[in-house]
Each structure stands twice: as structure tokens, then as C-alpha cells.
Image (tube, rainbow, N blue to C red; front, side, top):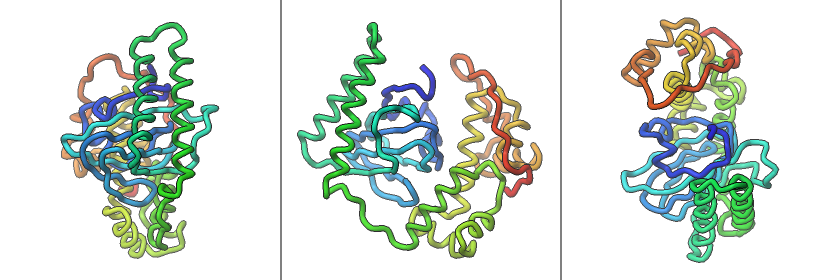
Length: 281
């Protein structure tokens, strides 16, 4: 099953044994609905950080920047829906704390039914999964209409942080400096750093670096693209700069991060050319 297919996973399966897969700020090319059933944690989503707990539902549309820090006892499931799906889904991130026990049970039952179809894979199981996920989308849209789930009004700083993380998702392969993002947003780098830190708990530079590290680690561990091609794709001026950056942020070189994995790595696909090959890291 491909990375972008309709599927159900546990949080542990999604993390794949590496805390960085969820813990570093990143975005994904598909929609995700997280359903947390046990434990505590924190989520950074759409430029704002919030706590996580049992019976929290989080919808993350494709290409929305987020990161999740989970406690050891955390349990939950993730519904992955391909972008471009005919299912009616929200076009913005949502984080809801579901208090009604019946409503909690409804979502759990929809997810479990889809998961059973995925596990058994009887004829037409994909059609059956789509039907269950369609019910999940109805559940989600119903909850969004409820007053208790209307998000709190954002401060000016939180609105700026939201704009910043959306820019990062679009431009992180450029190798641009923080000044580029500040100029795009019409503020100084100092002001941008301060408001993003207040809204997310991390500085603007930290979020930008995390997005690049996540992309680099994913490509190094999951594909056979040469490190120099990955460096160019991510906007680094040379493979040497890329190596120093990865050592600084992970303590390991690209070659050390490229560990053998079980199964076959994805065959190389053309990497989208970075908008600039002038590294800023």
C-alpha cells in the first residue's frame, strides 16, 4: 500500500520507530485525521501549540505544517486520505476535544470498521473502506459545526505565526534565510522570531530547520537518491554544507542516517528542483 493510499494506522505504525517522524515540524501530501485515545502530548498545528489528551480529534489537511510530541503511554489511530479525494473534507486544520461519550464511540467504531476491511482485504475492500471513511468525514463535519469546537480567536502574533508556517511549507526547499520570510510577511526577523516563539514554543529558525531535517531524513532513509541530489533539492549550495547541517541538527552525517531498512526502498523518483541552490543554512 502506497504512502498516499487510503489507510488506517496506529500512532506507532505512523512513527515507524523514529520519534522524529512526528516530532519534527513537517507537512504531508495527504490529509490525516488523528484520533488520540490514551496519553498526553503536545501538537504544533497551523502556527499554534496546544496540549493533547484522550479523545482529541485532529484533522490535518494536506501540506499543513505540524509536529506532535507524544508521551510514552499515548495510543491512537490515524486515518490517511489521499489529496484530491471526492470526499468532502475541511480545507483547514481542526483540533477538537470530544467530550460526548456517544460521539467518541461513533468515531472509534467507524475507524475500527475501516481497519477491519483493510486487515482482511476481502473483494472490494477498498470500496468498503471508502464508505467507512465517508462516514468519518460526515462525523468530522458535524463536529466542526458545533459551537464547542469553534477555535479561539487568534491574536495578531498567532495570525503571523500561521502565515509563517504556511510559507515554510511552500518554500523550505529554497534554502532561503529567515530574512526572506520576514520580508514576505512585512516584518523584521527579530519580530518574526519573537512572535513565532510565543505562539509555537519554537523560534522561526528552529521550525524552518526542522522542516528541512525532516525532508532530508525521509529522503535519506526511504529512497536511494544520492545525498548530493537531496542537498541540491533542499536548496544547499553543496553536499559539504548539507553534511555539516545534518551533523549539527542530528549528530549524524547523511551517510550514517542512511541505514539499511527492512524491505525495498522506494525507487528514485525525480526530485522537484529547488527554487534556489544558494544554501542559507
